[in-house]
Image (cartoon, rainbow, N blue to C red):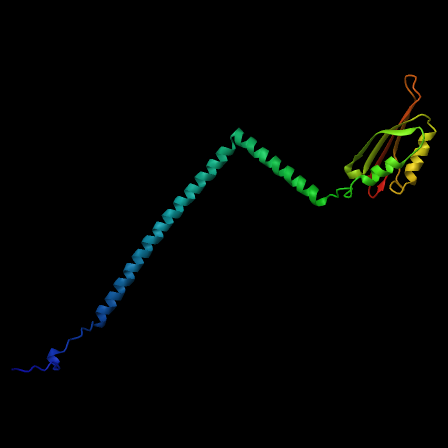
Length: 192
């Protein structure tokens, strides 16, 4: 039987050490490959960017050409008009006071409590949230109408309000009824 000593140097694995020149060449080769790949990518990117710019210019010119169409111009004007209307509504809602927010029951109650003999209302209107009041009525004697107006002025609800329009018409067609119209419109905190 023969014995072999595996620890001898001849049986040891040899490590290959590259000389510095070969290592330098490998590094240079690796850098060259990366540079070529980088140049190729940048050229490809510039070609893609140029293509994208051309497509964008074509789209812009297509849009400009399509806006010359009368149908699209009409639709654009319609949309602009709707936008303007919505803006006006928004401005109105944000800047306006909505007049009488408590209702008209006090006004109606006050009108119903005015009792002057031979004077009555035939029609009334409350507009602009109660800021504009118009009263139409009839009387058998014209002298009773100022009493009715004074009675309205003495009521707490109409206190201090002035009627700017007063129209009185003589009886027509052999009737004995005088017709009158009173109009009041509030401006900047007061009613005229």
